[in-house]
Length: 65
Image (cartoon, rainbow, N blue to C red):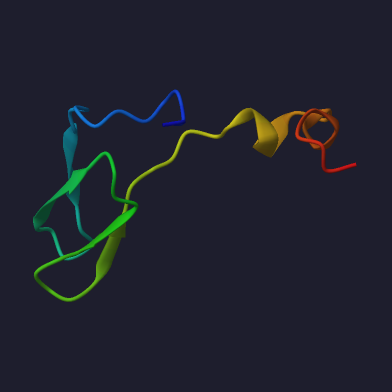
């Protein structure tokens, strides 16, 4: 079976605590982009920019041009 090299069935998740604008703590896991706070607002995980976001040669490397 072919798999993405970064994908593992036995991976461990990390969690961080983000403070919502209402002041409550919300735990968000590394495989989630957003989570709903107790107050109903969404909190978003900060993402690290990937090379495709900033590299001028990214379109060439990814085969988009």
